[in-house]
Image (cartoon, rainbow, N blue to C red; front, side, top):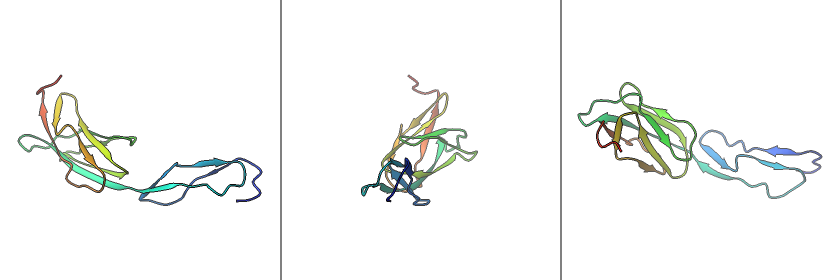
Length: 123
């Protein structure tokens, strides 16, 4: 860009399936190095059940470095779109402990399952 007379915010428009670092840059003069790193996004999903295989609904799934939550439905199924990089997924519900305590994902995954025990080994 040339001839800038004001502060301008440059935001990449890569579309769905990508996140950018930084998400935007503010410039106030002509520059040649307004660079962004594009990282593809992916989805993860799974199921949360008790040790008998019964679904557990309303379990909160958190993803490190990503805002928001996912929540299990009546079948214990959850899904999260738009993850990027290496992400640690954890399950939380009052009174429950989950095994494993977390899953690490760094690409698409459809088998990120947790098994819950109610009231066991709470610290």
